[in-house]
Length: 232
Image (cartoon, rainbow, N blue to C red; front, side, top):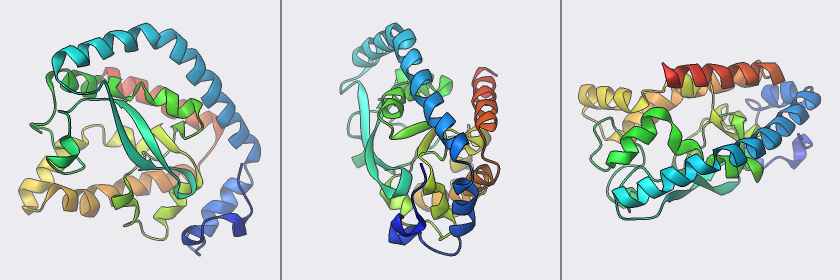
């Protein structure tokens, strides 16, 4: 699951990443269990939730013009690009009409999108990304290349594992759009700058801590905590 150090992309081979690499290299069994759980749980949930996703797809289509799915390039393990699957929650072409992150009162969010985001139902199609091995249930939320290029040397350690649907950072920042809006009002800076300067560094502290404490059962606990955070 973890390649030889020299086989990592050059941009990841630095002294800040090495300690995290060594931690994961010693946890091969946990990594295998993680991938096994990802695949089989994603397969079961895809079958069970197919009717729900069908209903949501119809709702999205009736609510606003545009595709059912939102496909955008994100970065996952070892800096590899892939196209994420999400239910569309914003107007078609939203990427060209504003920043890559959204505020709480973003006018681009559709009526159905507000409900989907609140319950995180827009994330359901990422089951397809998990089945394809591009993502995991637990891991650092995938960023667009623009933000990954601004990672510090240590932040690049988060790319040792596949991108995740949820994480401790995701739970902590479940109201990220409200935090962005708050910081923007205080600093008067563009949303993209606020995200990179104030939100991303704190999220990365949680993500790096996750690698230090990585384990199969800790993943299960994060998944359960995510469910509880959503239904509160």
